[in-house]
Length: 412
Ligand code: PMP
Image (cartoon, rainbow, N blue to C red):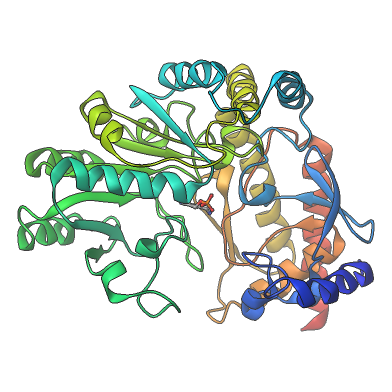
């Protein structure tokens, strides 16, 4: 059973100089829903599907840095491409033409891409997509699906979050995912006002089982947007390149007007991309939008190597197979110990919940028992598969999951 004295010590130092010590998902400020004592707080080394924490504990990592680790930490092909570019130049007054190479690769790879615009974070490109929709339509309203996450910029936040103004979210409309009549009603109520819809390719929200839309849903949305002149934005920041290298809209059989990528784009090198249709190219050109590091060349070189390797591996199929094997093993381990583990979402981004416990506490306890034994899961967020995961890792993970169920039973 792992212990984390060095992580805790570093965290005490962090608290003195960093607000909340660690912000974001792993921050104990969100610790109301993860049993903090079970988790390491800082890492020191990462390779393949594993990372090691400050105390030297080894984890098989199913969070993948919340997505960017898609080929394996320290992938040699990506790192070599980045290093070669680094030797030439990175962040320079005029961009490197490697930016063009990367855009060409995305246009060739992503079905709904006629162009690509690069930035750094998912939030940069979801915000660019909304700006584009508003500029193209000269309308204000944006439709969101309940349970969404589109980043941290004020327009994505909730009115009751600190610092958010009514004005920031005044033009947001919210509706249930996969309820077409409700969406149609909203369009009718706001006829001529809707700039666009921003949507994840399926419901992959936190604290809820993940689910896909019913057959025909996306095609009806596509038609509704076409008829009302609204822009259909797919936020593929999380699922992008794990479901389908041609885009998650392609996977579900429809075409986005704008599609946002980030996490899996360059195996951890920092770059994001908005891709879109020809009809919106001039609108994007007209916007005032850029950033200090947005044209740095090293992440472009890394992105090219990453996408090419994902293609060579036929990665979405591999992720599906690995995720299916792992989650079937987890389910069997649960059943062997009298528990029912609900697995939902795409196997490459699987979501777990111990059924028959509405409080979710039992699930948290099981996750804690897993983490303390060396598989890094998290309680109420989808997980991520990467290509470096071996059979041995999967078998070991299933063994640990089984031990964790034993511990849960014993604690009962
Ligand atoms: N959209 C989705 C679906 C995401 O999962 C995320 C990141 N978790 C974002 C947008 C925001 O991306 P970033 O944190 O890089 O700004």
